[in-house]
Length: 143
Image (cartoon, rainbow, N blue to C red; front, top):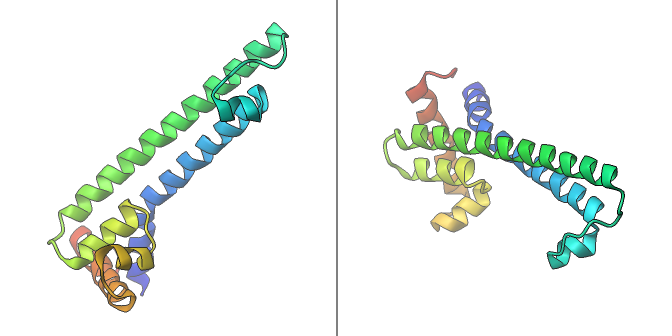
């Protein structure tokens, strides 16, 4: 079972990048709502609530910084997901590789992957283990 932890840690890089992106995106949305007000965001009207120019400039700079962090995290996620997807697709095509793609690229749980692929959950779990084993053997990760 040690190899599964090592492989899962390797495969989780894309998930970690996705989580980081979602966190920054949420932080940006909160800052935007704080600056413009929740009603303005809801209705797509972004009018500054205070006429103070210095505060407005600070708020705009803050939003630009947050948006830049969000975009950098998104690019990191896309790169990790593409790298991981190409590595998974280099494996022999089996049900196990489909399950790895569903779980680690599309972000589905094993139950959701089973439903998507029209498989039983128990079979999906077994095939997931086989996919992890194939991945470990292909890339020389610890077993």
